[in-house]
Length: 150
Image (cartoon, rainbow, N blue to C red):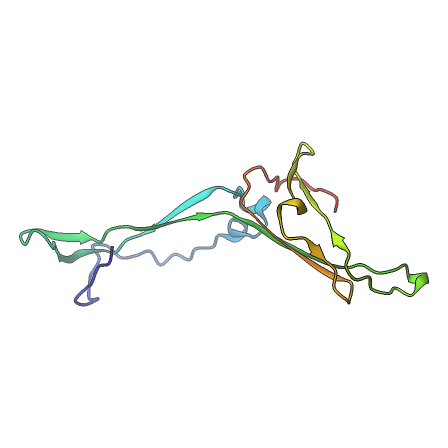
């Protein structure tokens, strides 16, 4: 819903807090620190509030003290990337190898496969032997608390 305001000179009933918000590690990208779970949704809302917001659009005798809420649901995603090079052994000159398909699996806590290269575009090395894999998951089964070998 779009709301038009004649001016922005609205005075709140009480002052806003001037306290500094310091979330520290609670807002960290490290999901183990923030406590956020991949795949969960968090609803964020905002509304304008004042002692006199505006006249009611349908009832001239009523005054509004708040706008409607504007809300958005943000889903926690896990995003990462891996870059690498496929080459011959150093004794063979470390020459790049072109055309190698790189497969991968993301494992869960019970050694179950959460996602794999079968579910996405294959990563294939170019003439430089380089490959890049981008991850972007919204899977609630992704274990962000444990360490797994690469």
